[in-house]
Amino acid sequence: MEKNLKPRDHSLPLKAFRYYLQFVNSWLYFRKEHVVGVENVPVNGTPCVVVSNHQNCLNDPLSVCLNMTDRRMNFIARANVFNNPIAAKFLRTLGLLPAYRMSHEGYAAVSKNKAMMDAAGQALCDGETLMMFPEAGHQDKRWLGSFKIGYLKIAFDAAEKFNFEHDVMILPSANHYSNYHHARTDMVIRFGKPISLKPYYEKYKEEPRATMWEINEVVREAIKELMLNIEDLEHYKQIDFLRETGYGRKFAMEHGFNFKYLPSRLLSDQKLVSALNDAYAEHPEEMEKVYEDTATLHKGLKDLKIRDWLFIRNPKWPMAALRGLGLIALLPLFILSIIPTALLFLIPKIFLKAWIKDKMFYSSFYVGVSVFISVPLCLLLPFVLIAIFANIWWALGYLVAFPFMFVLAWNYIRLFWRFVGTCIFISRKNRPIVEKLRSLRTSIYERLDNLLK
Figure 1 (spheres, rainbow, N blue to C red):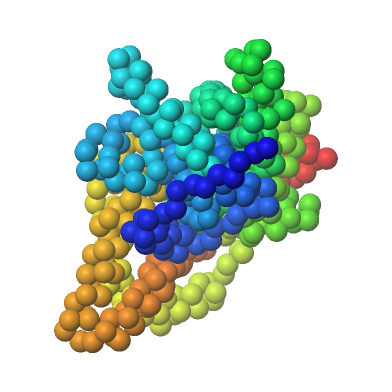
Figure 2: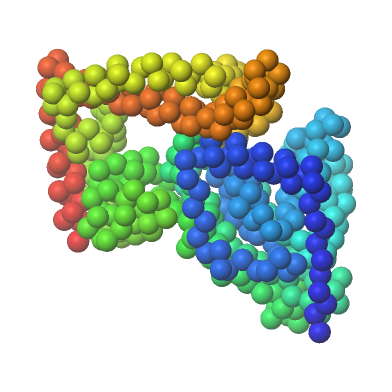
């Protein structure tokens, strides 16, 4: 008979901070977060280890945590982020536990991991949720690395503390982003079917390590099915380019998917990548030439500083002129919006290249700086000043209008650069290059259509 477990509740300050994090992450940074498979998440109070791919550093655990608001979440993080005592106390309050790595903290420090694993196991025994990334590091591409089995060791240790009378669940999960590095993009969190460890208890007692490796493979395969996994790293750039541009859009429409809706587009991309892999296996020489020409097309677009969508829209000068007039008409509104929100754009850029070498940390840096510096300066400080020197109603009005001003300013900047790209595309000087790229693009698409059939 399984006993009822009662996880710790969030304190009021922690709840308030979570709401603030959700405002910055889910309202300002991301345009839309899609959560798929919520029905697969075990009820709160079930000892559960959420196991996920890891491709976007802080955004991976943060977005999952903020979308699982009914439970106490715990995470394993690299020990070096706990170096500052004040930061360490704050991170532990949020549910983060330090993991020591021999390659970074040294062999002697690895022994400290026992305390971390004991704390993580105790959280499971209390009916809380633990999130782990078995790849033990983030990837720089949309592919799944090999898994370590530490998460299963923690899970089975918790089961052993229950005398193997209480079930512990492994919940496969995958995060997918429309863009890793830019704000105001979309992301998907997909939860798969939970895997019960109870059927493995007896086998684990006899062969613990072999049993964990067996389950590990089951979990990894489940996550592979949830995510976009481009295993052909030799042609990764070409495959990623094709799925993001006109061919990916065309493929989605022909197979009944919605290219503009990220959960549907993820399914289409999975199908396209599988089709490309099959085509390469059957026609390696022809596909090698396609990938070679795709790399040439990609480089040509980058050199000209234009995007593939221009070949789909095929704009003319009258349309460009209308867009330009629209930008001029909206300029006063943009200026009004950028003044109070400018630091959200400027502060991360000032320090980003100097402090962050790994591009996969860019979005994490943006969110972190926004949470602790940019948003307080742009939102909270003006709110207080307006309340003091005007009145609380004007201050509340500013509070409500702020997110809309940020979104308007961001979209104006995006539309401006789209207008610049349009002008480059239709420029008489660039017409021979554009037509050459158009011809190459058409040739690639036609050959792919034949090869994928």
